Image (cartoon, rainbow, N blue to C red; front, side):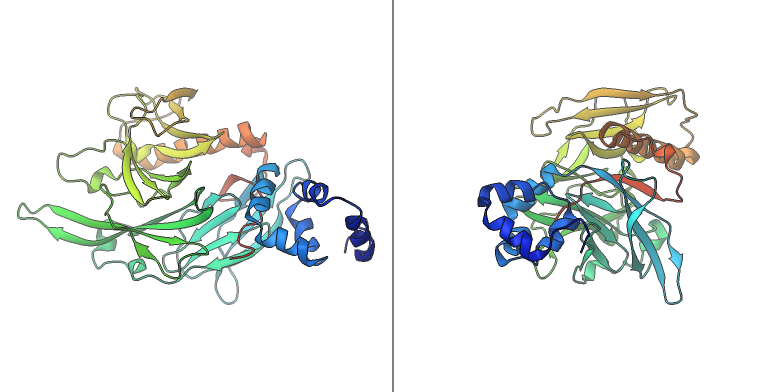
Length: 375
């Protein structure tokens, strides 16, 4: 117990003299760590903190954002581990609240939604709350097994995402996977793919969607969550010959339906393989190489439910060393990703990632939450 906290008996007496509404208004503004300690004071507080969805939602909206960082895997005596840590800019210049998790095999890119961190590997999918240190390991799935052709054309056959369905107030993890490869009479190939879903606190097993995705997702890009939907970059290399990507693949969590969101009117022939998506200030953002490949542009859209989303160009970075040379595709994508993430940190968290002197793989905006306590 902290020295600056009154004894438990005294706290209980204070609570007895305060109206329940005032107690709730005070507690909803407290840090996650404090609320975890307060669960032991009385049953009413424990139920409110652990099981009251309305309280958890209000608490999430009032929390200050910080940074979530993870470092490269390192070997211990038994297995590989990855280190995840929270960074609060105004409190210190060090990573705090670090935790280590095992990696059974190569990990995928992480994803974040409302304080929950999705940490998938090729064989194990975990959802972690770094603020509460809760870890949920999802059930196994037959679709996590790579098809025989996989490593001839992919480095992995699957890609993940996590999002929140506001109507049911549930969090859903999705897995887009390639399952088989058909040889056509023309000696071309056709890829068969699907998407499966696991809703935390509801499902016991993964289930595939009733309708198959209309386009293949790029397995190198974790899905971006925005206003009840998950968005993927379409892998143009896996389309039928002569077909091009019409936009971004969208999956609605509330009804498990698919659609396509048109891209920004940025330049003719948008290079999806070098584009990067993210959510910034409540808008869907796309970073991509400019028309002459001498700059990078960030376009933003706040309404994807209309027929023609209104995209606005908000940032331009240049001049940059970019090229149409296909050997530089990885460089161009990494540059788009870096600049967009850096803009997120500057605009929302108020810190330049270059000021952080840590050996980190990646840093994202993070809001501490009470998620997973009752899962």
